[in-house]
Amino acid sequence: MFSAKCGLLVLSRASSSLSKQLHHELTSRTIPLSYDYLYPQQSHLLDLTLLESLENLVDCSNESKLSTTLPSIKNPPRMQVGHHLVYFPPQVALSQLLPDGTDTLHFPGSPFNSRLWAGGRVKFPFPTGILLDGRRAACLETIQDVIVRGRTGEEKVIVKIERRMGTVEEGEEEIDIRQRLLRDDEEQTGNALIVENRDLVFLRNKTEDLVNHENDRLDRTTRILKPPSNAEFRHKIKASKAMLFRFSALTFNAHSIHLDRAYTQGVEGHRDLLVHGPLTLVLLLSTLRRYLAGLEIAIQGIEYRNLTPLFVDENFAVCGKPKSGALAGTWDVWIENMSGGLAVRATVHTALVEPDKTVNTIP
View (spheres, rainbow, N blue to C red):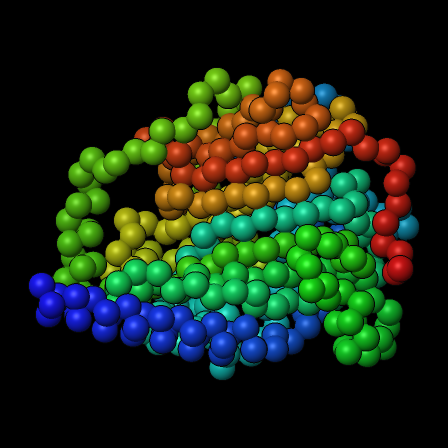
């Protein structure tokens, strides 16, 4: 008994030491600002990528009809909720990519080489949307917290990231941008036009035996998480390989689990290519937005969690229902996988808005 307790104590101390080390190292890391120009092309290309997947949704007006024509900045459109994900990509050189195609910006170091998108939340302080008028903008990214879970030898590292996006002046100094956008309290949006939090999970490399074991049970019945009942809307989508490629290109993301089937199956142990975590976020927001189109109800924020992977060429359904029965308020929105199990769970906050409210001014 004494020996077992001593062993557990040693394991606990080792885990605590790793947690403290990674927390200090990663939260002290300064991530370069990502700059972009808020032109409509990236958003338009995302619209084209999702055109057939969303065109059959119930729609209340022509406002949300997806156009195949690039909008003009002389009459600039507003950024749709979720489309910020195709702006401010990681601006890194090829030498800053790891063997699986991910970048090193949030990488905790070996052996935690397998990255997954666990969830997060987004606030849209200006629900009518940012004007895509070509203004220069920046994304300030900080690592807020690092959590190590699991027993020694089987740990996973959760890296919590905050991203604050706002317009900037041409030639504005980086130190001034950081001071203007950064807030100690993450609940305060300050001068940011969008505030996003991401949870990335980094896992240890899988051994060949573990990959083979997981491949052996791919066809077996696995535990299915029960989704909510009585959905007000249910929209089926299938993410093709072309869709995954396009989204990878739009987000400047070379992660092999979305592009390389042999790598995904042989190294990561998944049965097929994975649908991007941020792509599922876009689909959640886009589906609800189009369901509410024409009602002057805007999405103010979302909290979501990816529970099980979604795979290429497999049907899944985006579903939702209002918590209180009112369209303006809080919604339960979720994704059911091919087997009908709960894959993604989200809470979305909506409100009535003034349609002529303008944004993109620098406070």
